[in-house]
Image (cartoon, rainbow, N blue to C red):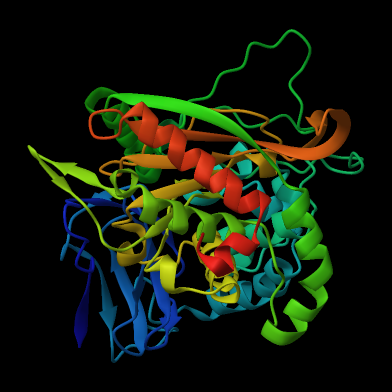
Length: 434
């Protein structure tokens, strides 16, 4: 019995998606609920599980193809077996069987670098390899037929083995396999040099399609600048009180809650308190109306290989430090794995972004519509400051608040940032709510 494999229902306002990676090929045996294919929308990556045990039949939408909700992208044969189902021949002649038997061990023991450089790299894998200038031959392949999967690349990057070239030149470079001409024309980009670096004087260019997430990010950033009267105000905060408090209690905090105490939870709690005092910063515009939100849903910007995503801490004002830290770590992990849901990425009344983890000293964050405010954190750096008439060295951080001047006046924006600064410089205010 043949079962249709369809694109799952797409989130509201999303009309189409892109097939990223098929984890199985025609003729492969699959188990019920096993992930068959990843489909990328402009915010999340959706997994399409096998509806039953069987053999994957025809693949009707290849990697890189655009698809819509409920579109049939493949078939599954429940009755077939891997040796006789799908696109594989049901039987082979005696001579063919002998040749296959002799070829299988050689294929299993073949050099992984040969498979890695094969044109069978999926668009998602090739994009990751190219963006991070990785050497495919250094990546351990675990996919069917010795092919590299997206998980193999991410595992290679997490292990720290992100060198762009091999550690030693092979005595004889492997002969590249014959490339599929249609695929080569579609990719239309040169293969990287064997050593990973272009020859001197080369003027190389390569064209790669923007991911749906990157397209959506571009649209949102342009929308924010075109529709909002965006302005940024700055201040600086002395991080020593928070750093001293964290150093004093971090071991006990970790023993009690099973998670490390970071700085982001302090800023989330401080932002919630400041938003209560200045509700316009927590508001949004809907046509000619202003919506004042009686809750604080804080978006936390997370950088991934696919682009920036902003999962939301719901009712952050009711969350404790441990819960906030745990949720942020969970968001970061699932964001990198593409496992965040649409509900976790929508809504939000205010956002926080931390460019300091990448070394940024100062920047002007862009609003995340329809929100009217976003806080930018930056690198903590020791600087000379004046305290009680004396010059002292303190760990200082620049803060930036970008806001929509249509509903937030300068006085409110500056006062909000000053309130947040005062709370961070005297964390006891969080307990006393003063």
